[in-house]
Image (cartoon, rainbow, N blue to C red):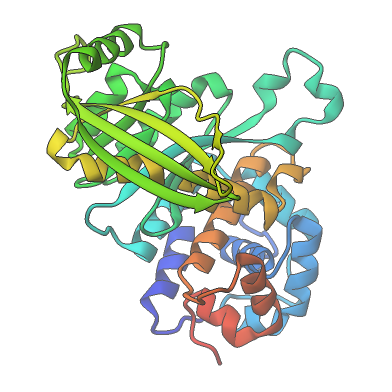
Length: 378
């Protein structure tokens, strides 16, 4: 295999080496070639296997400089078959290894954990059947706010199993010094224990699904004076005022790692001065002490970055929700290819340039594509 002196290049190919080739030993194309062609295709605008093959043919000269290529590029059938048969657990480890080497581990990171269902995996007719939920590809991701990339992801068979998938992600990641944010579905004793044992902090939403904790927060705010952090944002024709009220947590059985309770009050005022409905108060709990109220408030606000910077980009730029890839492990594994491409694109700093423009630039300019892939252009 031809390699440059770039450590990032060897990291990309070394991560592929963690995946066993599911085909016979006499396969026409090495596994690294098939995966590299797929990643090049997705970086350059492909949203499926047919498009990836077409782009790989156009980029044949570029691909041949970096991986073994026998005569022609892999066909879309070969790409689909390989991705369908690759062991997802091995791809999970390869993906996490690559992202760790690509992005490093900054201090005081905020890691958002959330799930996203790939809507196109189950057809419209199957949605009407009760068993369709079993076939959905629900991907649970750990998204780094500071790095703007997915650190790791796992498939959950159903939305109901997202909690267990999140726990497995936390056990896989190095979260020392980071703050993990979670929605109310993850207000579970075991989840909080994993975060505490692995040296991380947590900010988690609290709703009625954790009745003892929810009642304790409600009662505590009626009896104590809170430290208040206020923020103002001007967006969508209105000013959004938020007050983050933080108090020291009281002891609640099963939630011993929590040190702060938080109540968030919102008020929206239009630019004409008219007040809008602000919605109900929301509760959170954190392992950070009340003296870190500003950081807690920042983490709560950054919770939405997984929607704005990941899920929205995947649907708008990579057309993920309309993907019809359905065979065996292909939906889950192709999702990882998208996340690798998104992570690589996020590391290229072009102020004001969207992900769509970055993909277009990669398709037109081999030097830019090499820059995205951290390879030597030649």
